[in-house]
Amino acid sequence: MDDGPNSFQMPVLFVGHGSPMNAIEDNSWSRGFRALGEGVPLPRAILAVSAHWYVDGTFLTASTRPETIHDFGGFPEPLYKILYPAPGDPALARRATALLGLPDEVMSSEWGIDHGTWSVLLHMFPKADIPVVQLSIDAGLPPREHLAMGRALGPLRYEGVLIMASGNIVHNLRDAFGQMRRGTATTPRWATGFDADVARALEDHDTAFLSRALKTEEGQHSHPTPDHYLPLLYAVGAAEGTGTISFPIVGFDVGSLSMRAVIFG
Image (tube, rainbow, N blue to C red):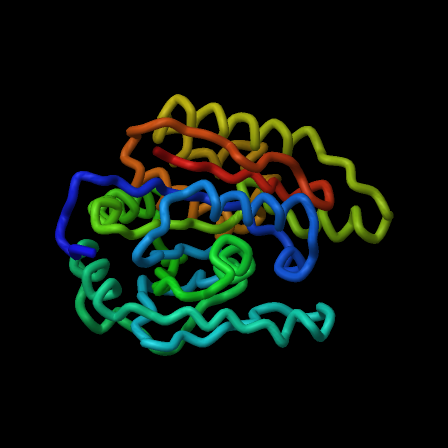
């Protein structure tokens, strides 16, 4: 494939990844991830933005063989044995670094592919033969700057790159764990309200609301920490308000995790 710009534009994805157990369970979420893989054009590479690489600074994975990172605890042993041996793509990492106007020093070999990425890609592209580069989320940046960074990465869509952001539009683990202890799965009104407000803003290309959504009362309940919301802004920025919006996966897991997925374009 020609590495230069072309007229074909890849879609952009945001995926609600939910529990790591979705990697090994056959459930509605894992089946939804498989359907996503069947529904998008085959990319030459994937640039992933995962909620689980939330650090002080912006970095890109630059290893030719990124490690499968099991960044969780307390789960069954089979989950820790999963490997997603996709190759890396240092050239894509350099290209993204240039688009973001960052120095080469941000290219890192200290991270790999975390479960926010591989628990989804394991179902979307099970052969693990498509190169993957991960971009970190800088915890020190305000939402509008994450949106701008996504916008800067938009040209990759014309270069055969699938930009995939992974988080959850609603992610309140304290409430979710409480529901698990009680044996309930009731979605609170603040969760359904925030999920619906964000979906409406996405359809309306309302970046002003999306940039301030975490400051709303429902946003604060939905995200005690912003890490699982911010990946959405990269997808919104990369999509640049163009094309159609669709929600191939909707619903809540353990009450307070929105599993909504979004296809832009």
